[in-house]
Length: 354
View (cartoon, rainbow, N blue to C red):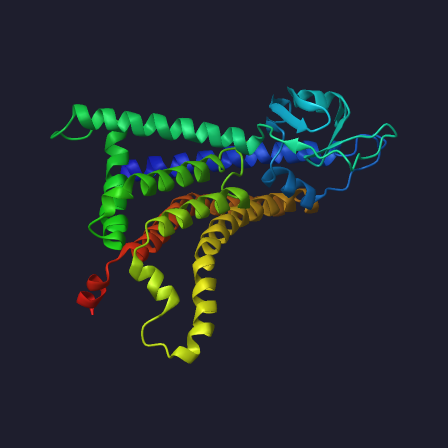
């Protein structure tokens, strides 16, 4: 047992050290080459804000390390020029400009003949960005893992689990028995596939975001909002009449107070998906910002002593982030289960509980 724990700790420390070395090397290069037009003898001022945003923001190319960049498809549509598809490498070769388009801080615009932005041309950016590519990768991983577990379960029915099944099956059973069943009740099986998919999708992307060069998918508020909206629609598409009656005429509320209660109830309905959205987005993004800020201190102070202290704090934060990756996936799934359960709960079940 002690050997297994020691092995896991060494693995975490190794990944953390690799992550720190990777990011440190990359930031060192960015600090020295950020403004290539300046003279080579002039020392560059390190911009920690730009460094952080470079790592947590979406991009039209996937940079794993300096010199190791994966060009991604740029797909643009305009009413005037139609559909245009090309590699993001074209923007890199043209210093952000290609074929009449300019990539201005990952926002693509059409240029007019004078070289300015053409405000009359609206560009629909349908590109495969770093976050989209990471989402496709996580979907492939999720489908592969779950298909493998399902196949293994069918082959080992009634026997002890083997391989990846032995690792994932306890997690699946825990989510089913400790999260979904208690919060949704007897009809839990209808919603279990969605909630398990939700948990593992968030977990996989949280972990991929900790890998050096990984995308910050669950730290993108558009993604967390979309996941929350799915829960919102599932909740209200399956809500029973008692749920809707409670919104219109809460029990024990005087008629004179109903207009005020309608405002409160409607606000509560929309606050639930907003809380899901902001909680996941804020926690994941905050973790990345803290780690990158700590690493940035090394290049600001340029001190061996500061570097040693920062390294210890960063190792600690990397370990915390591993736990947060699991915790945030669990919390999002738990709250989604609670919201769905409250919408489908039968009235007599509530009376029986009291």
